Length: 325
Image (cartoon, rainbow, N blue to C red; front, side, top):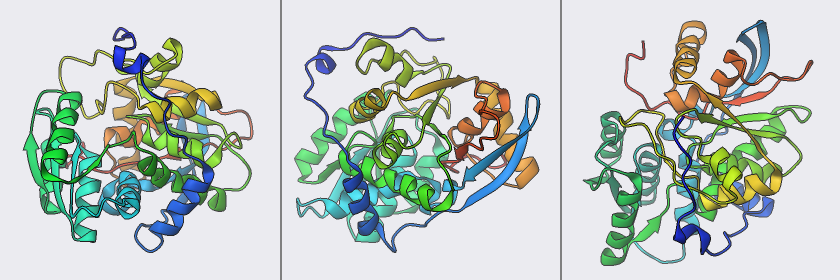
């Protein structure tokens, strides 16, 4: 496992993150009405280490652009008051696709700054939605600094891929849908990534349901932050992987996870790959590795639901190379 970093001077002196409330999520749902899909929930059972495990699969990979992040991108652009007709964002993958799609829908020009490690499949999807793609740096942090400066130079709206109140509120609409789609208050398992998804779920659901953040063993950004008391930089693997979304959790996600006492579970890469193969073999469902991470926690046994409990597993993205096997 990679070593945990320490909070940088930027993190120790950072301002308190903006609170994202359930009212913000409800406003996002109204704003997004007719623009995003209310993705279905599939109640089924999957193979676990000791036999079948009942789960409810939130099929968010069916969202426009194949990713939950389009909800946050659209909400951020629709709620912006800058009047800008172009947007700039840094992204290594799905957030860039989402912003490109949202900008195209709203008639805005879009520039995405990607690190050199960005997967070609995701860059191609950004191009397909009409975005300008610029490569800069080897890390997301470097691309983010360039995107911020570029937005200032061009007088463009600058979006953060995951650490932005409107982006988090948009993702939280998933939580409101789950309240309508699933009876009771079962736990919700979702991939951490940069934290936008779990932060949105936390803002929407509060402490009414347990939310479990699923991380890769190589980049436990949320558990490292919770242990350190602040977001910290994690040393990722030497080679780029589809699971390597960010090496630092967002401030908003950390704040929500800390206040709600969210738990985290780390899954091995081979377990995630096996879960993705299982989804294709058993259900003919294609997801990316991060999209299968939550299911991998159940199938590998690192997360075991209480007897009689059917956890909700969020399958959050489908942007991957084909074939997957």
